[in-house]
Image (cartoon, rainbow, N blue to C red; front, top):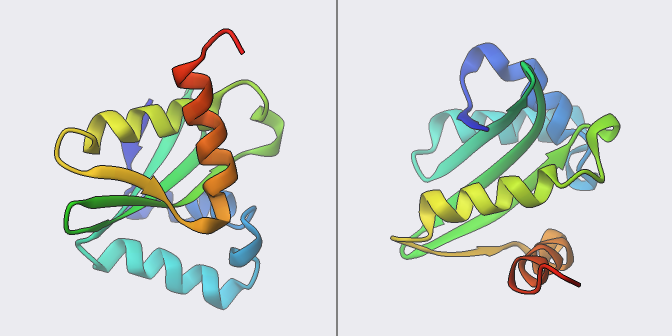
Length: 122
């Protein structure tokens, strides 16, 4: 289940985002979290499953676009569909008022999830 990021989950969020290649540097990671905390157009959500936070997805709203710019799943919870579920939930949250897309860094994964949604038997 997606939950809006709160400051008391900062360390968990930073840990999850640090799995993304462009967020390896601590200073860059701190800047990213600060942006999610202060910029009204940046929205970070954490995925909770069985009382554990196991994923994070971050979007930037730009006009009629909602752009997924971060997505990460704890390595011990990967390959069970959590990333796909996060994208589906983000599309439910933003899809009625925005066109949902992704940044280039995660485009292949995003497109893969969309193909699976359109063709569930593949």
